[in-house]
Length: 456
View 1 (cartoon, rainbow, N blue to C red):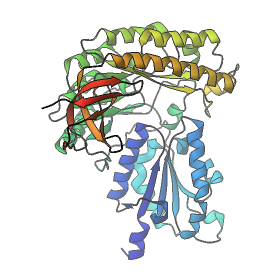
View 2 (tube, helix red, strand yellow):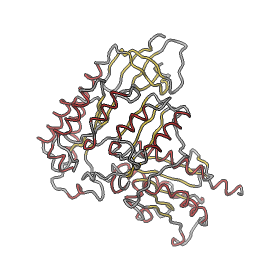
View 3 (tube, rainbow, N blue to C red):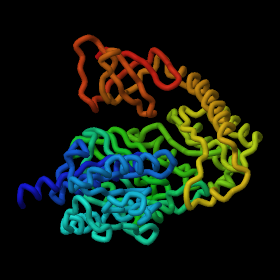
View 4 (tube, rainbow, N blue to C red):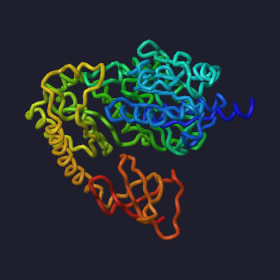
């Protein structure tokens, strides 16, 4: 390979969106490196510029197209551009119209084909200056809901040396009326539990101590080999030698069974934290959202957690201002917060997404009213979190160290309940990222805890 060709086989990858996207990018990076590419830190240094995109919310989607427009001028330098992920699948070949300098459009369901798509890009001549638009290279991977295959690769380039992700199920079959994921990530398809456990053991051998199992609906997992349920797989990962913490996200209430709580109670390595999105406290709105459960069924699952032997931290997602949501519906959501007493809530204003049923619904809520409801909900949740965090005062908890805030002289970390805990240590103490430290909680804030390392 010539020096010029080696220079061309450089890439820059920017990721937008959720943990699934972040882990997809780790696998994409590993795939490119295995094909002889070298990752570089800036667009200017790269021969291939990739954006792994999210389309859950409108602003993330707009950000991608703004970024592409900003770098259009770099095409004259022989750079090639690719759009990956949800926006790629949602917009398809229309991306070539909006951003003609893009050469590659690939949805997440087609990542397994990346090596052959990269070969197509490499073999095409590089066009610079003025040229016929018909000569532009255009490569697409848009499997959508056709594929039954998962994106499994031994070349994952993990960015954190102590905490790692494992995708166990891809796609979604739930079709919530506001959500683009079933259209952008394809149908549900699960890996074999044996392959997941093999990856977990490999990670433990490499020194990883925390694993997070991922899926759009992680607890909808169905072992492709029929060996283990989700709860059984969760327990098995928690029993892998060397693994101290196991998390999972995101769960769907319809498929959330009590056996998951039984596993958390039985296997110490399973973190005492469950993220269970509710979206609304009104059964009427849940029905319009096509969430496939009622308020009462959701609260039954909450009761399982509250009856567990371990103190399980519960977090959730909420959408305010869904089309047709009345003030009474919103008050039901506020009352749900009081009843559950979440440890954290991620709340958003409803925004219509392309190709979803809710975009055609009547009774749209004005944006100013959405903002009012969101503010009221966040204020209520802040008071709940302040009260919930008070119960940790004087407790000694184990913290996984993530870094240090030198300005405050505090170490930063996370508890098993996924709560941020900043702590001070005796002078001269120093910790590597990934260390586990016993800390006594001394202060409770709405969004975090503060403490001091326990001597010895």
